[in-house]
Image (cartoon, rainbow, N blue to C red; front, side, top):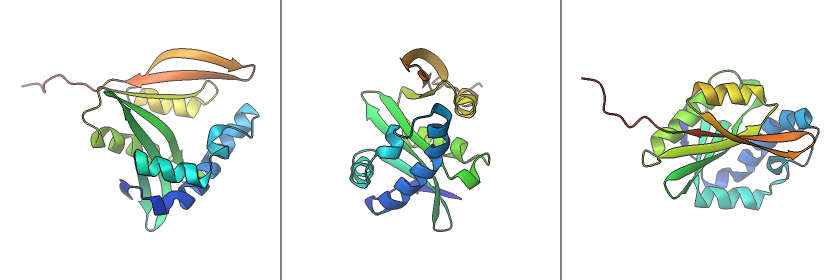
Length: 157
């Protein structure tokens, strides 16, 4: 597997992957209109042009992706997606690790997920993200906000 920056020409394949990956989230929350499922091709293309979007390739197939957008000294992480047939194989971990490495200037990485998304929460906690707050959006969704602060201490001697 290779991780590299996505290009605007990847927008269609990324959108297809995103819809496949988020279908289980939509089912979990009983909401077919979650933002990743209603985002347009043009919106995905604009994100690729304006943010850091990494893609994981298996040969020529895009099997995962993640977005990072700097806001001041904080990287806003979004749309971590892995192809359904490749989930549980470490791709999410690899993509987030690559994003952290690509943005060493970031003093923090912020992301969010739904309260029922236990697999996502386990992954983020394992990678050093800590819950900062929760916000109840409606009867079926509470958003969990998490932050990772890179260790900037000098290496041990």
